[in-house]
Every structure is written in structure tokens, then in C-alpha cells.
Image 1 (cartoon, one colour):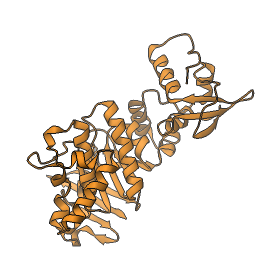
Image 2: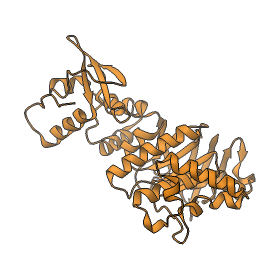
Image 3: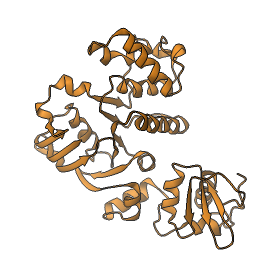
Image 4: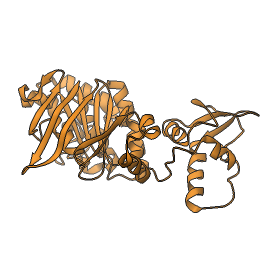
Length: 324
């Protein structure tokens, strides 16, 4: 659906994105990640022509973006920023309906859309639609920013580090909301982050960038198991302090980070499964069943967190069973 064909962006003859070739599939949650200055935000902004490319071609649905009417292009692309950029002099409903109103939607259709979108992020429509932006918490404001991007039913949503300024609990909650919205409305999402754990949790595929170039594109599993080069390996070690492709689930079993109490589980693994695969699974699920020679055991998010805390503290004794 979105295709970069030898795209380069220069500022004063200095290339910040170079010879960029990439395809993002329709309905995919695609993450751009890399260190500061890697060109990920520039890449994102070229999709909706907030930044114009210097060389090459960028296609949406096989049409060059240079041939799109800029207003129609941006109406079909929702945009969510870290700064949120809600209008403080407007109500929640007025903020959400800015683009639908410009597109001449009927008042009834706009009201119905606001109701649907507020409910989709667990904000009561009748309580929130007439509220002023100043009455909302940071997390509530960011939820409004996300659903505003969906208001006119665009095919593509661009998200530029939208949760970077939020506390960890609110951030995790909003990540789950965005995943739920993406699956419900089947949008193509292009998401910029510098947080590898966030990329793993959200992305169908991840593009690791460095100095305006692509270092590796793949699923989280592919990148964790088979980093393409030393840069990607070091980026994983920096972003995931306990990243170690050689450690397995057996590491947690040896240190007794598990429970024998039968739990509801989402996936089954063996003791030989890599620790990275376990971490990836527990980023999405609450509990994993592990088949052992004696009897099955269960590992939860709490067990994994306590294991990492144990590693950080450098304790010499194993953690006994954590109560489920």
C-alpha cells in the first residue's frame, strides 16, 4: 500500500534519508525505529508530504504521492503527534470532528462517529463529548488525539512517538488501545518510536534505521533471533538490557521463576525456547505454559519481571515460586 522507491531526502546537500526502498502492506502495523538522527521521523513525514522528498518516488496504492491533491492525501492519512496538538478552545467533540466537518459530513454522522470513537477507547460519549481539553488528563488527551486521527476513516494512520511523554502505566494502556483500534478498524499504521520494547509489542514488522538507511526489516521474532549486523545487535542490547539470544526458558526454570498451579494460558513453549521468544510472548499474553519432562509449569509476566529484577540486583539465590 505504501512504497518507497529509491527515496532520498537532503538538506543543504546532506542526505538525512538515503536510497530508501521499503514496502508497507495494507492493514499492517509497521514500526520505524532507530537512534536519534536516524531519519525515522523524516521518513514518516514524507508519507503525508509534510516533508518533500528530494529524489526517488513514494507511492500510495500505486499512485505517486506527487500526483495526489495534497488536501485529499492528508484527509486520507490520520496523524498523531507526541505533542497531541488538540485545540484548547474547542470541546472534545469539536476536536474530533475537525476533518469530517471540512469534508462536509452531516451533523448526525459526525455525532455518531464521535460516539463510536469515544466508546472504542472506553471514554463515555455523553460524559466526554462536551468537555474542554483542559479538563482531561494527559492520557485522556492522547486518546482523543488518537481517535481524532481516525475520525474521517482514513486508510493510513501515522504516529510519531505518540506516547513518549506519558508515564509507564498510561503508556502501556494506550499501547493496548491502539492495538485494539488498529485491529477493529483495519488501518495501516506507521509508528515511529525509539523504544525497542514498544516496537516489539506493537509491530507486525519493524524497520531498524541508522543514519538514514535501513539496517534490517522483519518481524520482532526475526530481528531478535537473526540480527542482520553488529549495529542491530548493539541496538537490541541497548534497547533490551537483558537481550541474550542464547538464554532459554530453562534459565527461568533453573532459578524457579514459575508456578506449578494450573493457569489459563495463551501459548505453549518448551524449555529450549529462547528467552527472547518468551519475552516477546509475554509482552502480548498474560501466561505461558511450559512443557517439562515431569509436568507442565506456568510462567507469567510477574515471573519474567522478577527474573529481570533478580538479574539487575545480582542476587545469588533463585526466586521461589511466585504466587499467581
